[in-house]
Amino acid sequence: DGALWVDADGRIQACRHWQGLSGLPDDVEVIELPVGHVILPGLVDMHVHLPQMAITGCQAPDLLTWLDQIVFAEEAKFADGAYARRISEWFFRELLRNGTTTAAVFLTVHPEACNIAFEVAERCGNRVIMGQNLMELNAPEALLRPATQLLAETEALCKRWHGRGEGRLRYAWMPRFALSCSEALLNGIGELRHKYPDVYLHTHLSEQPSEIEAVLQQFPNARSYTEVYERSGLLAARTILAHGIYLSDEELDTLREAGCGLAHCPSSNFFLKSGRFRLTNVLRKAVPFGLGSDVGAGPALSMLTVMRDMQFRQDPVSALLYSATMGAAKALHLEKQIGSLAPGKEADFIIVNPFARRGFGVPPVSEALTIDPTNLLSRLVYLGDEQMIAATYIRGRRVH
Ligand code: GUN
Ligand code: ZN
Image (tube, rainbow, N blue to C red; front, top):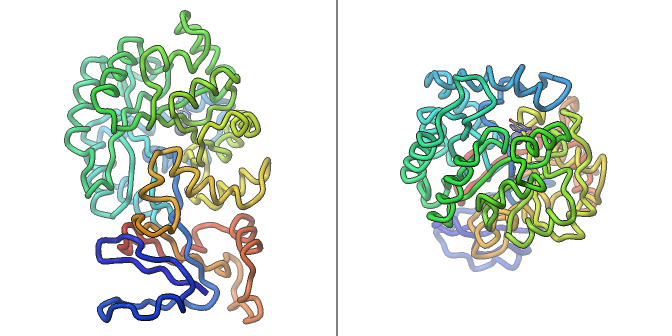
């Protein structure tokens, strides 16, 4: 029966049995939770696309066809600021409703839509890592810009937003994937990464065989997909690579040595038939990784359902919660700030009611209210979705 003590700055002062918290200062407000509710670290989504919220669940035979037939048309709508605002308001509130306190978010190529996304996230209280989607090649004209324009625009956006909200908002250089980029664009992004070492870099890597084949054709001097990014200086600490399914041992070594983090997106990998993340290889090579919903290829924002999709193929449940909290925090180099309820960290946490469940019309019987931690985790994974999230706090502030 625990207690979490958060100070006025939104930092965790203590996390222990409630009896150990006697003698609190008079001005501390005490909030008692109903029996059976639990406090967990806020969930981290390492890879999600804001402009794909409206197209979740729209199937296509493979990744490149899905991008051409479904995704690009939707993303083009973000040239309209009013549309961008509507979806942004929906998206950032939905993250909080799902208990996601930190998210690494893909946006579109439109600077105005990027500004709108940052404004909404700042106001709603989200912790985010995001930036302009950089695309020069291989998509409809409406989504493409010359490299020089993209590099100028993304640097201006970074200067405006990186570190705002007392560090809650962080910028990322976001080349969509190798196929969207010329070598000149990748090199320019590498220079920006070098110039701003605490800014993130987030892109896709090695998701489907036909994609990899096209990448090696477009970059004939590279021996692997990973090497395309390596040669332009994109691989470093705070580089997030989504998917990373078909990586050789050599590529995994390169990623670990550079300090990169992988975003494993099991729901998306099912949906687009991308293949199976080679978890044993990633663990053996000690490449840090966390989980990503990859909405809209992933059908749901709930990291509990993403944990379930990972479990259907792989791992014990304790490793799943880790992958959606502390594991992701480490992969993002944010483990000193978030990822657990350790004293001194920023108080990002969720209150979970493991008995709230769609389709249960009657209140739970009281005997069910005691549940041991192993069963609790299992229940979260097999039954969990946003219904179980009773409240969400970021830096001590209630945001849902
Ligand atoms: N590769 C390049 N763009 C995308 C995208 O939007 N979604 C996924 N899943 N893979 C990509
Ligand atoms: Zn993606």
